[in-house]
Image (cartoon, rainbow, N blue to C red):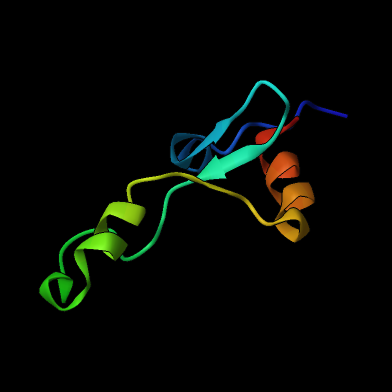
Length: 65
């Protein structure tokens, strides 16, 4: 069996913490219809979010972990 290549596009979009959790960025962060959103919501979009546990297995397989 050959080695599985890492999906580089996915690797650029996530970060893996020291404990093994996967962090992702928010959607709706910039641009379109931004002025209608509250300032609190816009600030919240800057913080990374832990990936949902149902997607962990899929993402780890794509990364070859």
